[in-house]
Length: 328
Image (cartoon, rainbow, N blue to C red; front, side):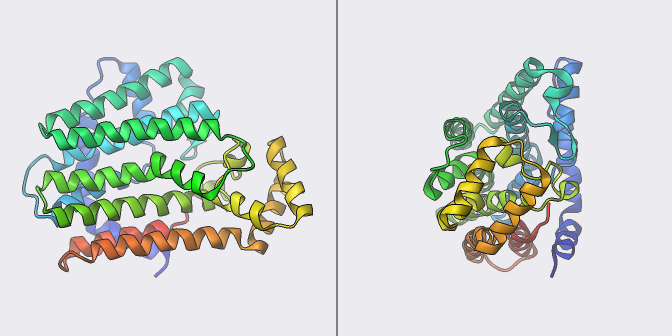
């Protein structure tokens, strides 16, 4: 099954959930100022997949949750995600996000930073409404780890000696922990058993790792229409992701020198970038990254297969597979 067919099958099953999540995102934002609504809406309602809140809804349902507030609490993770995107775009000097100009290029850095802070605060306020100390602790831990992951990435910016272990640590803090936290909270909302809670936490962690690795591979697709950002953005911003780390490990000295020079100068031309991608394909760096992601997807699927067969379980299995095969 190709990515479009898989996506269609998932969307058919979760259409009603996604509509309710969309309503909850609007209803729970509640800013006091129109400017906050405009900036937050620019990033929140510009085509996101809603994958993180959907994981909360599906995970809770898998564990038998019967309450009325799962959609409300699920949006905690979309607000957290949106906040990190606003802040990341400023730090990276990004120009496009989901094919549109980023918030700080329209409203300026100060307003964008403050709206990102508002979204973080809103997510914590919603977590407090659960009156569950464990859920509040999970959300607080996510916020701390994402901040540390961003700092770690900033410190390693342009570091041509970045190791795979350091890269994995960064993406665990910046991306995987949000997926993991969404799944963890779904289990806590449902008062799941310890075994169910662990299975969902494992699923979320491996899903998040795979999702980010594929994101990093997609930066070399040369198709900005699909990804919503300029190809080669990571290298231009000084971010060494797994494909680059791998090619620097495996290339001969001559190729390595050429690539290091290209990475350092950042203002490379499209033809130069195409040559880099060809080198990655030739030495297997992109395929290596996909294999690493596939290993995490297998572990995510193994975790969810511990639950009894159901449509919800099948949907979560499909979501994990889609993280691997998606083109955007």
